[in-house]
Image 1 (tube, rainbow, N blue to C red):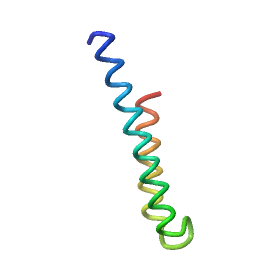
Image 2 (cartoon, helix red, strand yellow; image 1 turned 180 degrees about the vertical axis):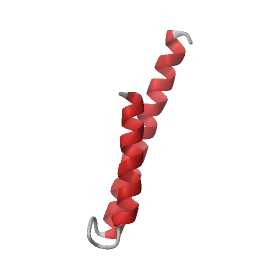
Image 3 (cartoon, helix red, strand yellow; image 1 turned 45 degrees about the vertical axis):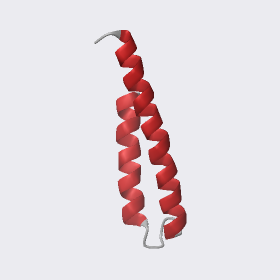
Image 4 (tube, rainbow, N blue to C red; image 1 turned 60 degrees about the horizontal axis):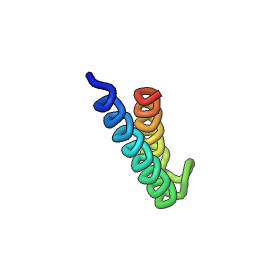
Length: 57
């Protein structure tokens, strides 16, 4: 894969990660954060953010 394509994929993943973090923050605010019944949602978002971060890393 050419370097330009790798860079484009990297930028796309980073953009998606930022969007994911934004959605996570919105969901956390709606559920009142951890301990307010939002733990399931928070756990899913945490796992997704970590997975994408690891892939970018």
